[in-house]
Image 1 (tube, rainbow, N blue to C red):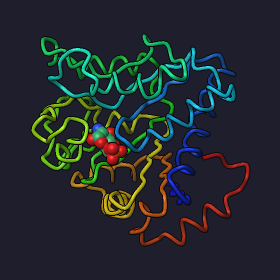
Image 2 (image 1 turned 45 degrees about the vertical axis):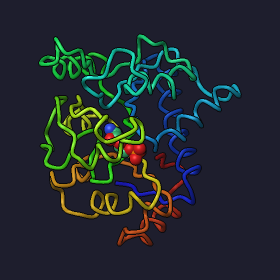
Image 3 (image 1 turned 135 degrees about the vertical axis):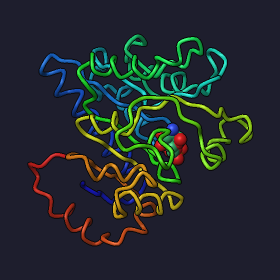
Length: 265
Ligand code: GLP
């Protein structure tokens, strides 16, 4: 896995935006649809804002043929709730860059059809040809999407129960931990690792321990993000604070500084 340590969160957003645009342009040049895996949470917002800015300034590619899949969704929110991840991703990103709404997907939390939601989501991803690049954040407990500690490293899209830590972390969107839904649908770790390229973004001191465990700790369901170590194409983009507890920090800097120009991210 490639670990890239950048000066600040703006630099992380800029490199992540370059990577996304590159996939969208390459797919368009080949007349095929780019399939983007999108994450919610606060971390990717700067990347979405950067991509939206480039689109506004007429510097971005066309997103008319792009297909997107969210990582996860809350279960039990009233229809159209502003904190649903589908509503969030449309508001924060896909509407602004012009991905047609019918091409924006998320796991379907409709209560009556919940038992088949995971299978249907897996089939939809497969039908689209699989995810080209998957943006990921990381939870303070090392979760990826909503795969909480203990999640099978081979898991597929399914229902999960949030930990108290995650409900506390996400309380800022709902007013209190008790108002955060207890259940979610989430791509599994096995689903996530099928994507062609995984792009993990982490910024801020609060993520330093989780990043160190994911990148340098043992591969274990106790730190779900450690599954990234098993994937053949992972880029971990960090600001200084999120990278601060990595033991091989100097080496990662050296590798990136000496990276051949022809080698893309
Ligand atoms: C949520 C999301 C994850 C995200 C994590 C971290 O739990 N389901 O996909 O990575 O939060 O969020 P943030 O970037 O806000 O710290």
